[in-house]
Image (cartoon, rainbow, N blue to C red):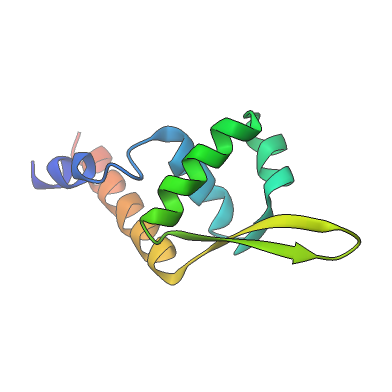
Length: 98
C-alpha cells in the first residue's frame, strides 16, 4: 500500500504531538506558545522540543511578539499547511482502504 509507506516516511508529522500542534495551527495560522501549552497539556520543555523539530522542517516559524509584554508566537508556514494537508489526505486514503 503506497499511501501507508508515504505516511510512515514523514517523521515530522508521524509524531502524534507534532501532528496535534499542526492540526491546532491549521485553522488559526498563529497561536501563542502559552495557548499551545494549555490545549495540549505539555510541559514547556516538551512543547519547545517539538516546535524546534517543526521549525527545522520549515513547517512553523517561532517569533517573539510584543504587546503588553514579550510573548512567543507560533505561525504555520505555507509549507507546513501544505504538508499537513497532504498527510491528512494520505491518512484518509489509508483509512478508506481498510
